[in-house]
Length: 357
Image (cartoon, rainbow, N blue to C red; front, side, top):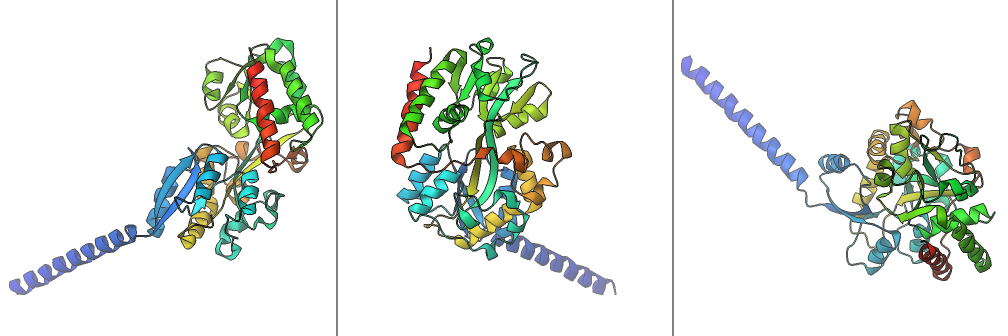
């Protein structure tokens, strides 16, 4: 009897060991399935934990690369050296890539989580019907300022920046469309104006802002504000959000003349090698819980309505970052203006920067 029990126990132990080894190998095989997708995104623009979660759920390895400008991303996709499966261009670059036949028309049936998106942020002029792109994050361009330094300021108009009392205290984001755009808006013109005379007017108008400008800066703008190396900044809303929502020290305003409503989007380049994996990845990011987690990590506004409902009230109902339909009516989406006109914008912006003392 004793020997019989020993045999039974031994068999159970061996069985459990075999089951464990089998589970280990099946999990290993899933994680190392050999499937990969190549993802090309802006830096610091996705929660790394979500990438790990996607890999664990699907067995697809994510090869993740970053770019620092739409132009760099566009050039690499055109070059075709790396066959990216998912990329994240801004709206005007979607137009350019479409025109160059570099994007795959999307099968919406493979993206069931599209139902989570807010209709307010779909069917925009740069991609009617979202045939080639799915919105990822969005935002505006506006004025971020230190309320403690200027407790009576409102910045309801772009012209408020030009006041003498803000001398050497204004930081400007280093972007031609953004800064030429604020002057165009101030003068009553469109952000997508192609009239060369209007662009010259905008350039001359910006020179009047010159004495108030402390610097034209990049990513260091947040640090400079926190270190009181400037108390006012023209920035993207995503830069402003952590400072505004993290304390009562700052406020963010989109002037009444209007501004830019920008979108970063998910697309599948035509040279993609794993289109099915790309659809899985995009749909994964559109999941409400995943999108909510990503939004909290990145800090920008999400077009995912289901995810927004999961955010704290003070964030999802903050109209400075989630503008109402009335507020959106004052905003313009950038269009691809063509290389020649874009060159004129860049030249006018460079002339302005060179005029700063």
